Amino acid sequence: MQIPYTVETRPDTGLHNSKLGIWLFLASEVMLFGALFSSYILLRINSPDWPAGHEVLNVPIAAFNTVVLISSSITVLLAWGAVKFNEFKKFRLYLGLTILLAFVFMIAKAYEYNAKFSHGLYPSTDNFLGIYFTLTGLHGLHVVGGLVVMIYFWGPGSGMFHSEPKHFADRIEVAGIYWHFVDLVWIFLFPVLYLL
Amino acid sequence: MSLKAFHVFFILISILMTTLVVGWSVRAFKMTNDMSHLGFGCLFFILGLGLTGYAVKILKDVGRNGTGGES
Image (cartoon, rainbow over all chains, first blue to last red; front, side, top):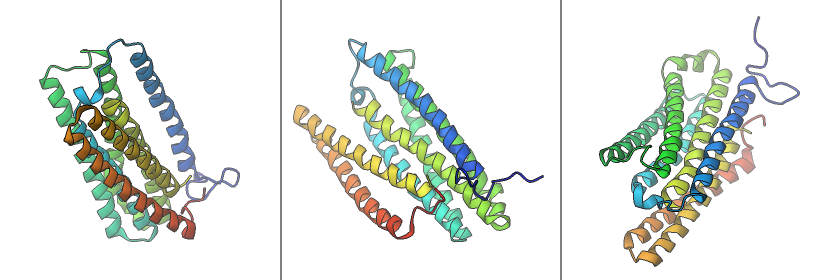
């Protein structure tokens, strides 16, 4: 028996299964990150000596990572467009660039973490570093999750491009929506943690 | 919401973020007279300008072709 509404849209919601699923999932993610942002605000307003983020953290690296993630949001959109226009080489190029940018982000993040640890700064050092490592660590895990999915679609999963192009385009769109959410979280994290 | 519509929303939020960073840089420069803050602000000003140009381009495209999704 074939599962209904994997490609065609449901008449009542106007959505196919995967798009409805990703938005429900992202709603739960908003609650997760929202709870952590609320924790950050509560910790900060109740702390008598909260440090300025730019005095503790590496702002140039975070700014570089911001540009990297904004660029990756453009390349993932281009990858989806290439699938819709049936251009396999361009799809591989743009999704490959997105994967590369995600790796660059993670390498820069690892460098930043390593610098903190080498200076004896750990999540247990104080509340600021505790919430910094929690928020950026959780965000980093989401980047790794996105990387796994995109590497699958770039490599072994790309066979569907030729066999079921509409279904594949929907999958890339849903992966792209997830990736944009991950980028959006960073757009909030960067000024909140590093500048304010 | 399609990926294209979400992308437009993301770019608009990113432009707001660059504005905030430029404001922070100018404030930090006034307080410390450190030129690196001003340079940092200039970089984000250029990024914001680039993103605004890109947003205009993509919004025109959305106006012509829609968001490319069913909803």
